[in-house]
Image (cartoon, rainbow, N blue to C red):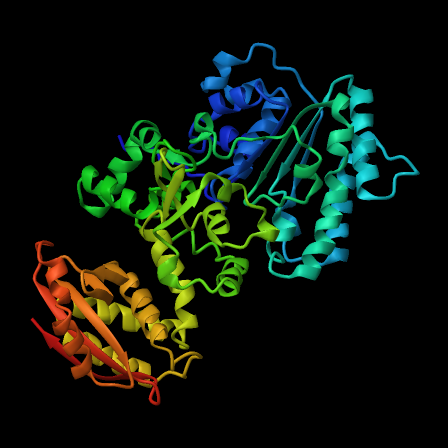
Length: 519
């Protein structure tokens, strides 16, 4: 007898709906129990699409005393009382891309919904007055302390983080809205906030000095996301179904899932974490797609990369002190904290002796998505044409035909509009870095050798390419430098044949001028 099709909660962030309709739920309720019994004010930062909203919704059901929803979960054996508290749950994700008036309208709608239940005082006009009145009346009418849940508290601010004037205006509105949370302490049972970033000057962090930030606390490392253990136990059937559909072994499925969606760590040590949104979509679709970026690349990130002058090759393989993770978003002088908080880089190692974290791009899905979103800055072309070019280029490289790959690239670049900075050698170096990254190959730039730095190193399954790039010179001069500095010597022990590639770019034509290849 064929088993029923598994129901995956794609895009469903409501705990009650997932439980009532028998969707797959990875049990995180033990974390919920401990998180609500060790601190009164709690903040959690995680990247988008990582399950923050579902976690907030789980808290809502828990504090509403909905015992039946937790049947068969860890919480059932932990909670004995199941008291129903009044819950004020604000989802700020509806307040993205807004100006001052729209933000005030959004807050008005959210407050009005609860005022229809608990009433509104005539003298309460501003958002902070209305929130304070709501908390007090909810407490008085129910005789129980109030739970306040704020999901994506920073959503109204993220899109204007690069706009000093707008950021200040919207930040003041949000500061005003959140300010009663400290003054209402006697009436509050529990306060929980989620977000991507930490905006230091919001009253939430400057006034709520007793808020517990669990974002990098080891006990809560796996509170969002799916661990390998959870996948191997609670999703074993899903792995087997996917293997049957793709006609590969379950072991091969696990390797592919790991390569594409694993690799996140939000503290150290930490279990390997999979992006839940991507993982569930892969199981639902029966293929290894690019889901996280398909759900939208934040414009603020691209703008911040430009603001800080960060090249694509500089995003991965970084180091940061512990203090960097707590850097105020709006006053930061380095993009590393924002890249980390947004999920584009993650913790890969930690050196306790010098208190230094190693940060890198988590997995293939993020690397490819990131490079695709950055490519238009280097290749001003229609997406379809670029994607087609990259696909053919990938085939050339797989076939060890670098000559055809460069000829194809030469033709492609000569048919597209000029980008800015095409008279700068680094522009072409970064363009190569992005394109080769999109091929799924290992690529690095400015690789040190005993006698200098190699412009680009590309490693495929069969070959290691050592590349020297020149601008408005000749391929002969580039090859001369490779030979003079004996760059291949540095890679003699890599176990692959080393191929020397010398390339000259023609800035007038905006494409490759000539090249030489030597084995």
